[in-house]
Image (tube, rainbow, N blue to C red; front, top):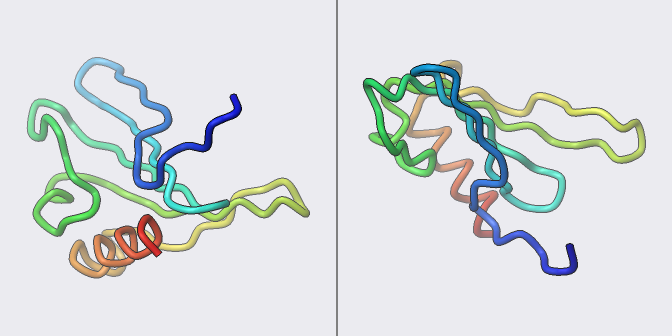
Length: 93
């Protein structure tokens, strides 16, 4: 792959029945993981408060030096509005 991944874009996804998982690329080394029940939400937008309703979302940072992911934020802990703001900031800064 020679082209860079557009920031904010979905890079991976998986569906198992009604549970769907997506990963979005935010900025170098930052990723957003989104889990949702697609019977309740068809196309959630992790960059808006309303889009995170009925979803579980996390932001992770990849540490290249130690080859591991570290947890940065979770929508149920900081609230959908703050999470969406942080995700949008990381995807557009």
